[in-house]
Length: 198
Image (cartoon, rainbow, N blue to C red; front, side):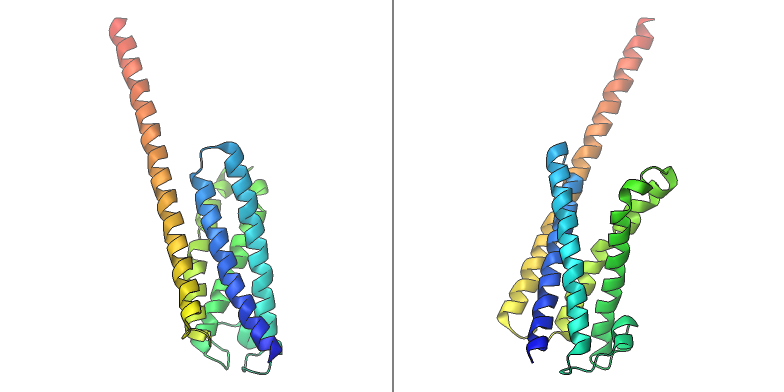
């Protein structure tokens, strides 16, 4: 039973780690201060590594533990687990998406050298926004603690944090775009004024 308790705890901690990683990634992208952005990105990467480690622990312990019927293929092939196959499959899909996001995050510096790779990096890395709902759905439908008040508090608090971080990023991006438009308008006005004078 000890493995079962540790596996559940690792699952909740992985969900919280993913929440922190997504919130930090969203706020780092919206930051205009270079030092603050760099530190936030470092914390974002660290949270992502911790999340991956906890996720691996969660999956390994569930396979090893005999409390539920999850085999190695059941854990690795979506929707084939002997225990709540759909819910476990959502978790498996989330895990694969997170691995893709982590790989692109780790390769960001190398990919930045190529204009083509740099263009597709952001959309691929944005898969992280799909990982989080998959993790929440996996927890709600596969978790044995879903009926408890504290589990719903963690789900709700995590949802609120992610929604707030994404909203903040969208607002920051809108301000940034508005600033660029304002600068371009000033440049056009300056060119128009110079053209009239000559």
